[in-house]
Every structure is written in C-alpha cells, then in structure tokens.
View 1 (cartoon, rainbow over the protein chains, first blue to last red):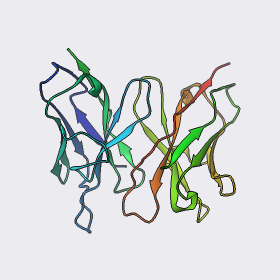
View 2: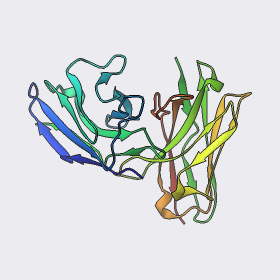
View 3: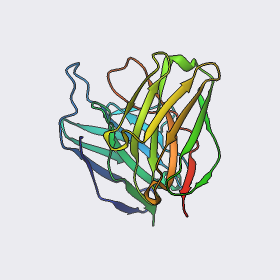
View 4: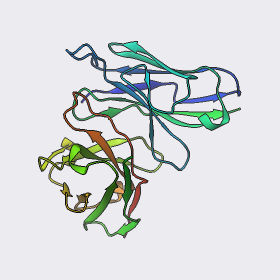
Length: 112
Length: 121
C-alpha cells in the first residue's frame, strides 16, 4: 500500500495568517495519462470529510480560492492564504491512483 | 445532487456482526461506486472496500478480506456494509462515500453522515 505522510500533525494559526501542510507519498502519484491523483479533504469538527482539492491543484466546487494545492510526483502542499475561523478541522491528503486508496494521518488546524 | 443517508448507531457484542446501510438519493445509483471508509475514535481514515452496483463487483482492502461484505440493492439505491467477528478495535464511525465509475482514480464525494458502531461486552 502507498504510505501518505503529512507534516505537521497540528497547526495553530492566527486568523488572517497563512498556513501550509505538507504531504509525501511513498510512491509517485503520476499516472501514465499525465495526471497526478492527489486529493485533499477537510473534516470539520463533528462532520464528514469534504473534498477540497483534486488532482493536486484543482479546487472542488464551492471551495474558496484561499485554498490552493501544489506539488508533483511524491511531494505535495496544501496552502491556505489567509486562515479563517471556519477553516478549523483536520486536513487529510489522499492518494487515489492505486487501490487501496490511502490517507495521510491528518493535520489538525486550530485558530489561535 | 447526490446525497447519502446512513443507518443509525449500533452497539454490538464482540464476535457478532453489524450491517450498516447507505441510501442514495439524487443522481443515478448505477453510475457510481460506493466505498466504505472507517474512522476509529481520534484516528484517521481507513478505506475498507467498495461496490460497483452496475457490475455487482466488490473490492476489499486486504486487512478486511474475509470479514467484510459490501453489497448493493439497485432497486432501492442502497449499499450495505456488513462486518463480522467484531472486536473492540472495530469501534469506529463508518462512512459511505460515492466514487466515480470508470475513472482512472478513486476519489470520494459526497460522504454519508457516518454511523457509529460500538463494540462492547
């Protein structure tokens, strides 16, 4: 199975400040079709996970543009340009190129 | 817009089985797959397996092979996940989630609201 490793595991951010989460995979997520199948989810407190970013850098429907994803191969980053109170929760990266799909351990983001 | 509604919380004895349902509304049930992902208390997300209703094919994570059975009833647009030989470590919230069929990759949206299964003697 592909191992997904996130850092840091927790983050305390002042509202309006940026935040960044790293995700590394044990194998390349680049497919022969040229796309890279790395996803980011946010699980807000008491809620189910929700899709934020697909294929490394594409924002899902309704996701604010303060969220951005980047990276290639095995190294990826999720950035929040200006953290808002509603962004608190646990962020997970996930690889979808190989079965079983696997998730990072999660990064808990809280507001200072 | 697809919505997934799961059955309610369950309390089970060790060694027993649990069956959780996931009813889809909106969209065409046969045009997507349903995966099951679990989350133990305070832990991360773990994929268990999926069903492709239009094909009637299920795939399972190796960890759960032989203990999990995922099925679907196209007539009611409902998917089921049955986990047997329950132990305390199976205490978790179980989520169903839609994934596209025929896509190169696996990804999930939307997710059901989750079903808490507690295994306790």
